Length: 114
Length: 113
Image 1 (cartoon, each protein chain N blue to C red):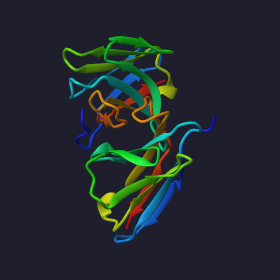
Image 2: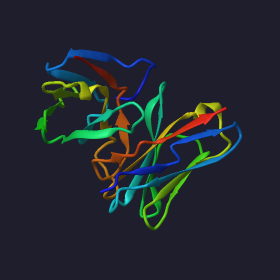
Image 3: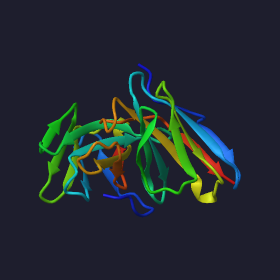
Image 4: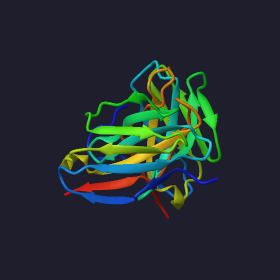
């Protein structure tokens, strides 16, 4: 969905636990979704992506789930580590055409407690 | 392989001035997109360039402009700077127009006094 507000939701987890970060998107016509991780002072770093013809995709320690019925996206991080502490953004490609425009969510801050 | 390179990393300007930011995409990437990141509005799309032509544009005033060169490097320009233009300006590159995933640089932090 569109970015709104001043405060980012925060998720606090214990090191070694699994983390789940949720995101709602706005356009049912979107055919591509992506997760980025942003550490302080750096640009967004690509984590994992998924196309609308899939409902699940796995990477190294990360899984993205897509529920098109309720327009919901989630990022699961297994065995969360201190290095996973960052702000996580979901984004949808605008529509299904040939555009590079990504619409970003507001972001979720993940805090990993040692 | 080098990532997306943005220069300068930090910039301080005053109201009314103009500024030019530079972006060198990943080698072989031909599409460059620009985004503005602020605490209040988050990440917002400015424009996308491919083959030296603007292909898509976000909802920003005409003071924001850009261009792309034949080597795919891109610049964005903001004229008549306003206090609200203070932001992190991010550049992202991909292989082709509309290509995903986009890979971001670390941005230029622009502060307007």
